[in-house]
Length: 261
Image (cartoon, rainbow, N blue to C red; front, side, top):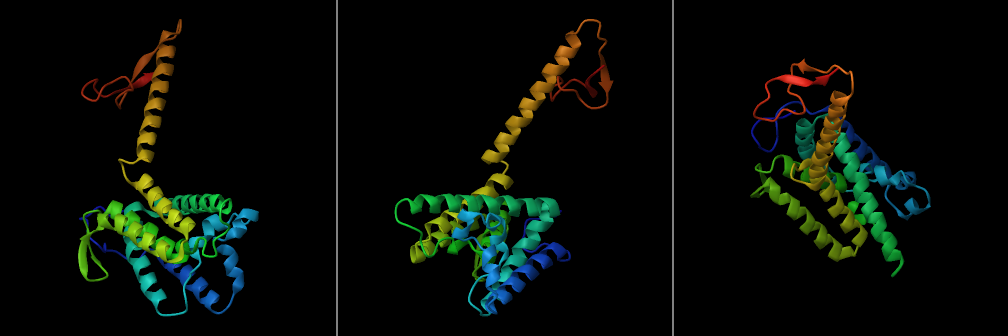
């Protein structure tokens, strides 16, 4: 894991996971450009409503876009941010982040589209804003902005700005794109994906607060069980040695361990 100064482009070899990710995107992009329509079943489409539930996971890994050289620029951006995020999080947390954010974004978009069906029908551009490598880029830039907030990035390779600003820029760019094609479900999906990344990575986020409350509740339950054991008749209870126990505070109590019997 990278723990050095916050800057864009950490050192070290490119993880094989990133090479695989780039390879999958480029391969699926090329196959779609050659007319392999079967890959469309992996994109997020209205077919998800009739049982194609795997699309909730697979849609970011199918390369999209018109056949041109811009795919190389998008893969380069994916490589830059993906490599840094991977080094900071490690393999397991990297893929967990992508999985949770991908599914969370897709579920939010699908629910919005279902609501729209009740009023105006299915938009022909539904989910177009959040397909393929562009969704992955959005999630990884958001993760980078949270993990390396003070890093300086050249926006459009010209304007230097702090990485944390990219969270707001991504939403602004997605909103401008929404004004162009009216893909409300895709816009909500992008915002939901960014929100999922924030919940998972920001220590001040709601997810972290809930996790902290859960740990405190478990600690209180364990303490209650220990107190109950201590109060049992004819039960000999002694202090363990080593780490501090549950009923020791942060400033005292020595290094004795929890109650054992």
